[in-house]
Length: 258
Ligand SMILES: Nc1ncnc2c1ncn2[C@@H]1O[C@H](COP(=O)(O)OP(=O)(O)OP(=O)(O)O)[C@@H](O)[C@H]1O
Image 1 (cartoon, rainbow, N blue to C red):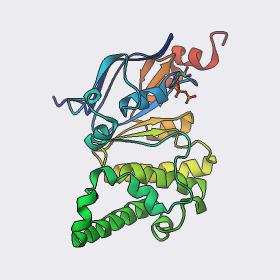
Image 2: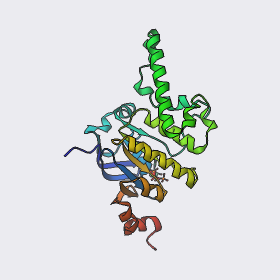
Image 3: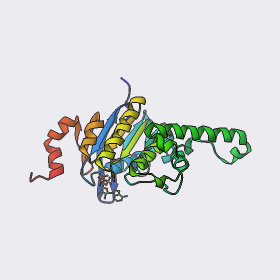
Image 4: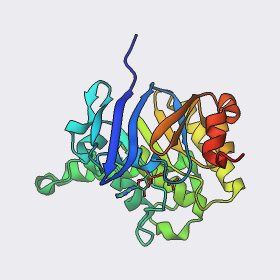
């Protein structure tokens, strides 16, 4: 049996007296999508922050392809294949689409000082990067690919989300963490973005995805398996159909009086 791509055990993050993540065990196989849900403040973003090296764990382990994640810097975790998007738009709106997306590739690019002495090679590397950015943007929306050097702020909310996802994907991650991609979008925009994501998944069958989302329709459409957190603890893991029937999940969302 092959090891899961991501294996976390006993993952705990404390902020002073608050335990934001409490002994989380989770395994994610290549090519699967986990829908991660839970009430506000249940630890979902903290999980992403610890996996990407922004927070240090108080206890527990996490391995990506059997290599200890917490031995690495955030940059090295990125190079090892973990990429993410953020709940709030993190684009530089006055910078071009290209600049925004290319940022995601820079840690893989050798553009140090020595590179200026190899100008032909540098030119070729930049041309190749422009082509990669163009081709990934075209997979989400040809209109973005056609306007690579326009400021990102000129685009609608859905296209800004697409640009953010392209920035995460340009580094060819093995594990993509999406933090509430539907935030700030209409239901129709959300549906179209999920169509794009599902198309992308079909063409990249090995990519694993963890999607944090409050929209249950989105979770139902894209998840192979669902995990529910409450007060930092995993209270459910299973199919979407089982999730909506689960009493503990209903109590967590609606309170014990229901
Ligand atoms: N840097 C921090 N310092 C102190 N407390 C924090 C920090 N980050 C998160 N927390 C706390 O940890 C708990 C979990 O927060 P987290 O943002 O992970 O929840 P969440 O499930 O992502 O919530 P939401 O759905 O509202 O985004 C919350 O009580 C939050 O206030």
